[in-house]
Structure formats: structure tokens, C-alpha cells
Length: 72
Image 1: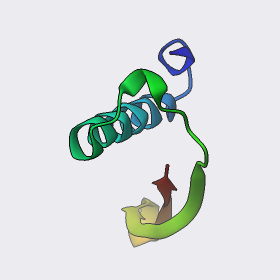
Image 2: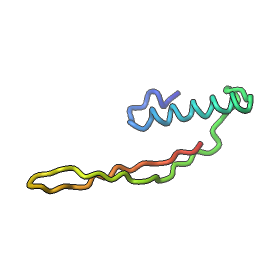
Image 3: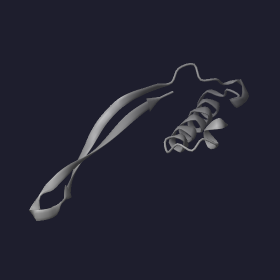
């Protein structure tokens, strides 16, 4: 699959998600993995994880780490 060869950080979780969806379809519904295709892939914004990073002179700056929800 082309996702294995791409250098982006998000490729590996998406790769795992696609294979998990294929395994679920073959196990739960008895479909062949060769006959499956992706008809719709949707990425929605998730919650933003907020942390505080300590800085000089007793100050702190917020660190915002965005997340997303992926649906296949």
C-alpha cells in the first residue's frame, strides 16, 4: 500500500485504521478483503488537549495539541 512508503507522520495510524477496517469487515460480515474498497473517508476535528509548559521567571505558556476523528 502506498501509505507504507509515504514519509508523513499521520500515514502509519491511517494505514493501521484501513487494515483494521478491512479485518473487521471480513471477520464480522464475512466479506473478502480483495473485494473491499473505500467508498467514504471522513476526518473531523476532535478535542484540543491543553497543557501548560513552564517557562522562565515562573511563567507558563499553553501547549495546544489538536486531535481528530477518522471515519472509514
